[in-house]
Image 1: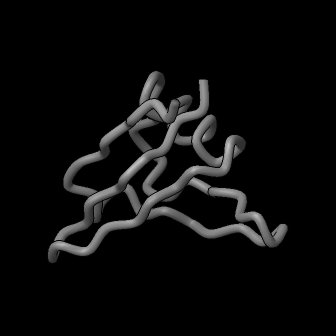
Image 2: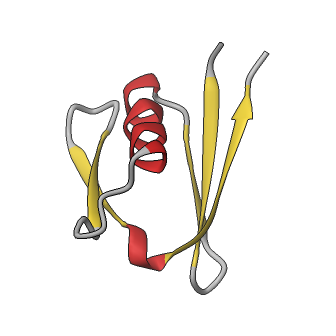
Amino acid sequence: MKKIITIHYIGGSNMEINKTEAVEVILNYLEEPEQDLAFIKIPLRSGEEVFLNMKLVTSIEVKDLR
């Protein structure tokens, strides 16, 4: 089942992620977080990557798309 993740940041901004590979990276991080890892690398549809600073994240929502 396809999932969408909404990441909420300090200050009230948010970002939605629905690319399958990016969702998997985030879910894997949440299952086994590494204490020393402040940034996680998220692949974008364009082939580029963005670094997500986990120290600025206040909450993460995971929803199933039907």
